[in-house]
Image 1: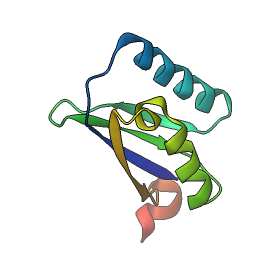
Image 2: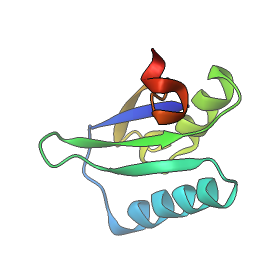
Image 3: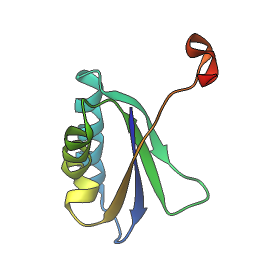
Image 4: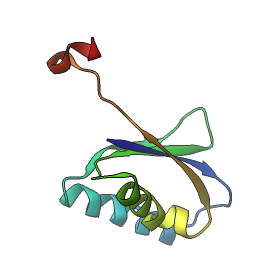
Length: 90
C-alpha cells in the first residue's frame, strides 16, 4: 500500500478539482483507492492507494491532475498496514 502526500504550490480552480475527482474515481473503479482527503491543519492532502510496486505508485501519483498541473508537489511513502489480522505487526 502506498500514500502520496500533496503540498499546495499554486491555487486550484474548479476545472482542476473536477479532473482530480475524476482521477480518484478512476482509481476507485480499478479497486486501487483506499482513502483520500485534504488535511485540515496543513496546506495539502493525501491519497492512500494500492499499487504493484513503487514504479506504478509513482505513475499513479504523477497522473493526478493536481500534481501534473504543478499546483501540488508530492511525496510517496510505503505503508505497511498493521491490523488485527496480522496482530498489529507483532
